[in-house]
Image: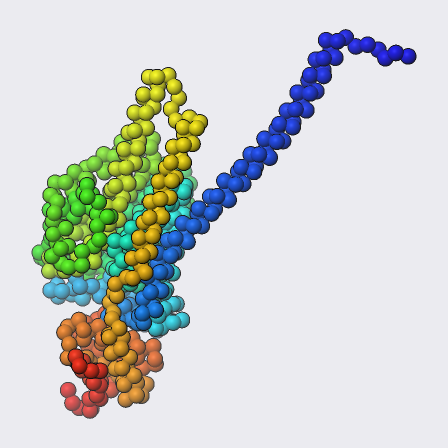
Length: 563
């Protein structure tokens, strides 16, 4: 029997429907597979770039540290004092304040850094390796905080922001290699934590408010390492809090977490403040009166130097006092004031117009700039020689100012392009044009990071010896071995003569630390005792070390009863 004949129109419609449905399913499956493959490729590429940036910034701290260790680095001078304090963290009398400060001069008070976080962080490496742990321990912490900065930047603006952070690190290494040659020093260690604090403040402002506790931790390290950096660290914390609260006051768990981190970071200084009268915190806060200060004009000139058209980040830190003074006073104070005004304007306009990322970064830059300007304005004139190393944070300010300027220029060009495109009736930067723009930007940033990284690592491969010399280490070994042969383990007092103030003080600190970790109970007097905390003990054997230009230092035991 013949099959029933269906109407041709009905048959064709159903047939077309089945074909379209099957083709759609096939296309969806193919497109989904293609999309998944493309997504996986992009994810792998992102992880590769992310890992490469972390590896590069770790290299920036590892290379100079490895070079210094290979040359025979040992704790000497301030490094020995920091090592002594770190070694004492796991003792019955741990330090509750920071390193002694040169700001004490002519004040009638002994001033110390606000807290012992530097010693706390380096305590384990120093115990594990007393001879070298201070330096490689500092490098580990600095590498870690740079990775934190990279992650915060990646959270804000992806690979581009992270690459710019890496670029900043390489530029610092290239132009200020002495910082990376001695990361354990209390003037060098906080510089990279300050960079991480700026980026964390930016991350909070862009909506990642969980970065505020990280900001509090990084800023606390900065503030406790050196008195000069207390104000910029504090203002960054306040700016981050204000930017976070501006986003809304819903859940405040991030605020509670940040306060908790702050309490942990500052519990030791608070204990010292309550235990001693007057405590260090009050002494520092009330000791500045009556001193001759550098003043606002000088401070604004330094800010002008940082934001000059000739980029400070392309200038190597001058090694002499007079070249540095010439650089710091080369620009007028009014230009520094204009920079502060422009930063404030950019912050307000960007936040008001919904450009939260730009406004937050400008706010963080403004907090850093104002903090450094005020710190420099109230800086004691008598300590002006210290600016040879305290000026380094202005390199960070210079980088941040140029980034704000470049970002504003990019925004202006985008606005003009969109206006021009609307007049022509076209859609700006769509499709291939946008892809080409992104590809070009990626190439430029990759070339910049690669070039700065190469230059930085070349500088890091041959850094200047910071705080020590091979001859100093040799003298330390000779004098230390002689004392250990001459005096049995127990209380011993060390005094060094025959050199200038710094030579004798630095060797005294180094000898005291060596004897301390070897099982003796050393003590000394004067600045060395203030920095190390190793004072003379009752009944201590007295050893006199005399430096010689022609040969090894002479060591003799002072008979009991003689001075």
